Length: 313
Image (cartoon, rainbow, N blue to C red; front, side, top):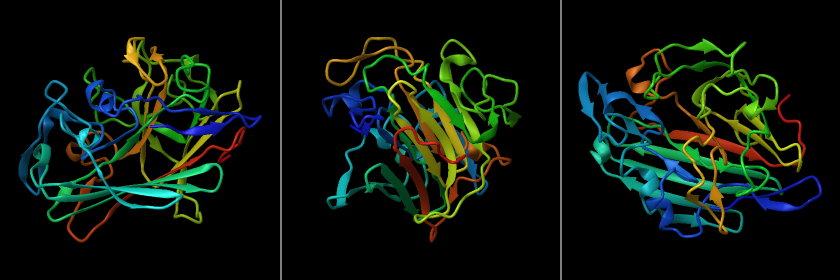
């Protein structure tokens, strides 16, 4: 709901979009700050095949299922399973057949502060039957501060040489294309608004290409560096996942209520969603999202908010 980060002079600002009232997260929409699941992003036709059997999901975007359906994990009230001065763990039980997915799922999401400037988000899941899982954290970031305008002048670097193009419904075509010489090329830092693929900006999956590095947490790869040149606030994003959905908030139109009396214009924040690729259950060429009994889904997301930091290099 809030994430306070310092600028180069030590002045802090709340850098995530959100609402002042809990119920607004369920009624306004937009997945602000949500943990999305069971399957974040889109599944074409709300249908997949698992072990030769068709699985029919509950749609919520035409015939597509987006972010787990009309009653996805973003709309649930989670239990607090554990907490301390530096962390909190939320837990959720999803029964077999929930939004159409097979298998009963036990899910946790932990937020843990690591020193002054780092936040670790860990999402885990286990199942009692074969299923697919793809959880994603869906904060919208604005390093100038929430409610301060758009993010088009903030600079972004992505550690991705390829992306998955989509059709008019936001479904991957199955291709994996190079970002070079296109609006999708963030291999060097550049302003987000310098080149957009269309009037609503980005809502695309990027294929993370940097190798994992050994850290004190786990093997992680750099995913994205976001920087506000005016304030010096920075966000360096690391993960153990294979994809990154970049969404620039094209649906905001100045009417959506935010925090502290703010309303959010188009491009008011950028979501950087580490994930499996969209529609992976229907794309055997994409890295698998399958989870079987005895396995643990373990998704790590590390945010480093050290001001003016040059990140992975």
